[in-house]
Length: 218
Ligand SMILES: [Fe+2]
Image (cartoon, rainbow, N blue to C red; front, side, top):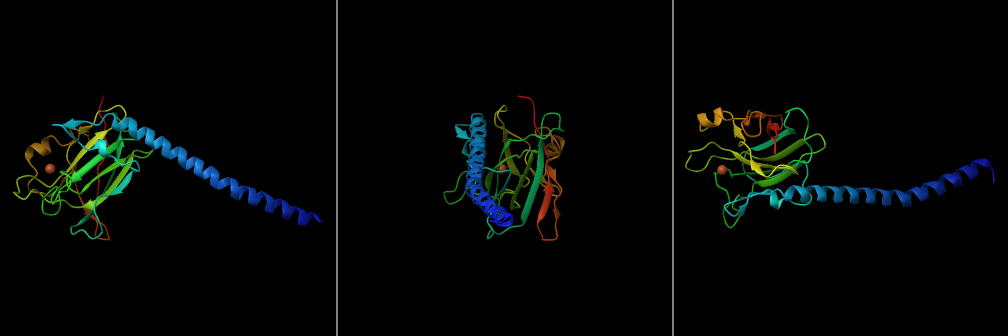
């Protein structure tokens, strides 16, 4: 056997061994990652809180919770909106990974659950910040309650391994005439930064805005 043939044989042998071993390695890694995120989530869920005997939201977070999610369906009427941001530690500078965010909002007529839906309606979801503290969700722009007394808003709780689930300032939308003076005065009190978003339409016609969040001391 010449050297070139031997080299080729050796290469093919190594390649076939790698083909068998590599998927196993990948599977092991993804199993480990899934296990890790399960562990984190179960620790966070220990800090889920009830109000008037009902779980606020963190308790129901699904196992596959990710740093990004979509609350609406493609067929839903309404203006599409994409909101992203970073969650920071108490210093407002250090990104905070593994922060569970729970969100819910009204539909385009200002209602939550109808026709037997969950009391928070069908526009509800969960996010777990990534290693850089990032999160992102897509949904449709909510409407104010039908009686038009309160500004359109998104309710939000934050839960971590060390922080009990707690409500932060609602997401509000600049230009909404129903935003109260109190909401403007207290903006940023719980969750830091400005929760009154300035939406800008991108070239695809989707409203976009950023909201960062600052954690507080346990
Ligand atoms: Fe509400």
